[in-house]
Length: 277
View 1: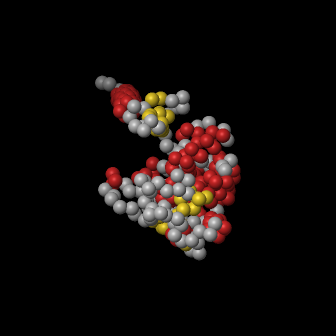
View 2: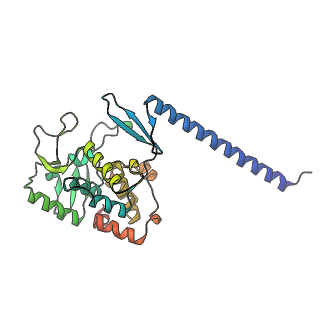
View 3: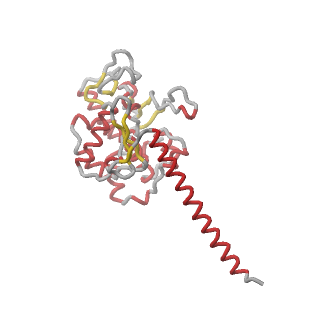
């Protein structure tokens, strides 16, 4: 008669081996799917790990990242922001203080910002076609006391009235603005210009994986900082404009940040983490 313990041990080892084999098979399938995707898009590897590049029909290059999880540590953000030009700073200050997508931010008008009650109405939001959305879903988000004070000084200095868009330029083919819109020349940069400013500045300050950043990583950073500062998960999803599934995929433990780093977060975004509703 076989020893029961020996049989159980043998079965356990077989299960582990089978699991390892299944994982290897799945990993190979994933690699194969990615390779097929890159082939269809005519993407090629670059010198940067996890980055592929392709060429659009108009001849312009674009890149695709395998990993979109990178976020700014507070010290990185401070160094990055301090290295921006005066013209670029309004764009990035707005993005980190609101968590808006660049297109959402560019369509905000001065009249959409309630400085007294510290909130902004985001009217042009991302339409998630895969989820059956056909129209924009406006959302209202809070802003910090410090950022409200800053915006008030900018508006007063530049004589910006309610009908002004915060965008610095207008692309009639892509933007959903009124005809002949009033624009803030020192305002939010276009999507291409903001990406160029981001990449160049990150490279300039010595961020080794600067290619892993896009404008989206600023939203990711604010979301991560909210978690670190103990903001309720449901409130974060409402503010950022994510569903719970997407938010869960972006989750990062607050334990990765030190006390000093959390202190730096509060200096950057002010009391925003206390205002989120």
